[in-house]
Structure formats: structure tokens, C-alpha cells
Image (tube, rainbow, N blue to C red; front, top):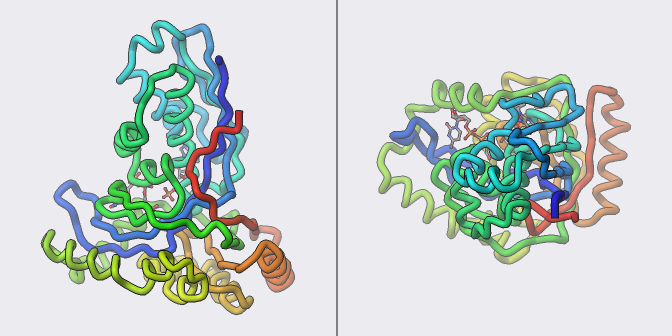
Length: 314
Ligand SMILES: C[C@](O)(CO)[C@H](O)COP(=O)(O)OP(=O)(O)OC[C@H]1O[C@@H](n2ccc(N)nc2=O)[C@H](O)[C@@H]1O
Ligand SMILES: Nc1ncnc2c1ncn2[C@@H]1O[C@H](COP(=O)(O)OP(=O)(O)OP(=O)(O)O)[C@@H](O)[C@H]1O
């Protein structure tokens, strides 16, 4: 087989707590992450020449070696040089649906799809955990994007414990096209404002983790209790991103009044989601949002929780 097409699912954070500073300069996190059906379509195709090519028609996505999908291919090639020697290079095509720089791990999901796709294309026989280890070298969200579904993520986001899936939940996602948040900026700003509240020792981190694992949010997910889940959404980044992005703060307030199960900014933002019990309710909330905020700069999507991060379409 010389070509694979994969669906790369976006992620939302149902819970995101920034616990402390790690020796490696990253932040220790406790998160509940969820894959959603809003996805990019990634094709990996064997080409005769020893090159990595990226094609993407989205103006904000680089089609060169800075693309995270390119970096994923380069990493696999470096680890398996014989594969490229035998089978040639790869052309990666990205059909972008996930809003860029939104806090939905668009780049991370593409990198995860390329890892899975090259494993198939070059018949490498990698396990999921080996793919996740490769993903961790590319970015903190990539390991989750490889496996997807519903999971507790700790460490810098690469330590994953699967939770029971709630595939019946739907959501509305919204983002102003003109608003962007840089993830490094968000962490740097959070550290500047809240660094003195950080838990400074690993024992404290373990205690915090145990509290969250036995806390309301994780219990609601384990019980598949959508009402309780919606009442315990939490994202520490809101404390700094919403102040810096008043339009997104107003968007969140409007979405919270629509009557869904709960509303939260995802990741480092600025996308905001509202949970819904059904596809019909998600469509109704999206229509209400559009009439409340007719601004053409506002992108609105509906999606649902899905059990996997990367799906093989063909
Ligand atoms: C905000 C989230 O999307 C939540 O899921 C992730 O934590 C971000 O994951 P990501 O974009 O894959 O982040 P990476 O590419 O690994 O790191 C980008 C930058 O974010 C900061 N960063 C990221 C993850 C983490 N646990 N602590 C950090 O401080 C670091 O400054 C890093 O240089
Ligand atoms: N394949 C890709 N898809 C989207 N953006 C990419 C990709 N490769 C590199 N980028 C760059 O990464 C930046 C962040 O884009 P991305 O959509 O991953 O943000 P994000 O969803 O906020 O990520 P995260 O939630 O992991 O912080 C963009 O400005 C873009 O230039």
C-alpha cells in the first residue's frame, strides 16, 4: 500500500490545572482530555524520492519543515533510516478543518496522524506506546492525540491514564478567526502571574493528582454523568487569557447563557466550547449563538466526543 488517509481528531480540555514548574522548564499539569469529531484529513503517500513534502492550503499553516507533521515524518525517518532507503520519502497532504492556534491541538493531531500513517506505510510494527513515546518528542499534546478518547494527562501532558468514554456527548466550539493565543505566551504569562502559588515539590504534585483523580470531575466522567461533568469544567488558563482577550471573554459569557451543560475555554485558547446532550441540542445552541453574535469573524462548529485520536479512513 503506497497511500494512507487518516482522520486527525482535535482535542478539548475538560479540566486543566497548572500545578507547578518542572526541572525541564515545562509545567506539571493535571488534565482531563477528550478527543472530538472535528478533525483534519491527513494523507501520507510514498514518493520515489528521499524527501518529505507537506501540502496544506491553509494560509496560517506552514508547508515546510516547521510544520509539526513534517517534524513527525523527519523523526520517524531519523529513527528508521532503512525504511526510507527502501521505500523512498513521503508526501503529506493536510486538509485543515481544525481552527489554527485555537487550543484544539491542530498541529499536535496532525503530527500524531503522521506517526500512525508512517507506521502503516512503512510497516514498522510500532506499538501504541512506542508511537506515544515518539509523539512526546514532538510536543506535549501529541501522545494524547495518538491514542485519543478520554484520559487523565499528567506530567507535561504526556503521562496518560485512559478514562471511560462518553461518546454520546456533543458540543459547540467557537473561536474568533482574528483571535490567536500562543501557547508559550500563555504559560509564560501564567507563570508570571501565578508562579508564587505553584506547588513546589513532587510529593505535593502526587497529592494534588490523587485529589483530582478522586474528585468530582473524574468521578462524573467515570459515571458518564454529563450534568455533573458540565458543572465541574475547569481551565486555569482562563485566568490570564480571558483578561487579555475581552472578545473571547464576552464570547464565553454568551455561550454560557445559551443553556448548554457547561462552557469552558479549551487548552491555551482562544476557542470556547459548550457541552450539549445531543446533536439536536448542539445544533440548536449553535443557531442561538449565531443569532446572538452574527459577527462573520466568529467561527462556529458542532462536534461530538469520539473514542480515538487518529482514525484510519483508508
Ligand atoms: C495547553 C495544552 O494544549 C493543553 O493540552 C498543552 O499543554 C500544550 O501542548 P503543546 O502545544 O504540545 O506544547 P509543547 O509544544 O510541548 O510546548 C510549547 C511550549 O508550551 C510550554 N509548556 C507546554 C507544556 C507544558 N506542560 N508546560 C509548558 O510550559 C513551554 O513553554 C513549551 O515551550
Ligand atoms: N500541522 C499544523 N497544523 C496547524 N498549525 C501548525 C501545524 N504545524 C505547525 N503549525 C503552527 O503551530 C501553531 C499552533 O497551531 P495549533 O493549531 O497546533 O495550535 P493549538 O491548537 O493552540 O495547539 P495546542 O492546543 O497544542 O497548544 C500555528 O500558528 C501554526 O503556524
